[in-house]
Length: 136
Image (cartoon, rainbow, N blue to C red; front, side, top):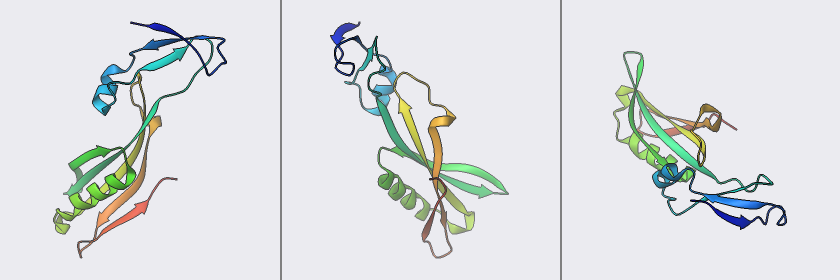
């Protein structure tokens, strides 16, 4: 269902159509009450969501196998979760991890242009996690 609303971004020259586009994505990200407003005259404001994905990999016989992983809205939270997951691993298995920054736009399918690896983490022999910045 759509509802016409006067647009404030273009000083009322256009009408906004309020849609529920991206409702499935919004529900998955915890923003199910949000809606997208598209102006028929201007571009309007973009609704973007930043997420930080953390992944742990184990190197077994020269092949990287994925281990624990997760997603958080905060970079620091993702770093903490990755640090905890790596500390639970055995250093002999050569675990390593990465944090990926991803931008989601409601109503679109995530693709590689919205994704970049920003940190790589390794577990040293003493059980300490070392982070190395890989992105800008």
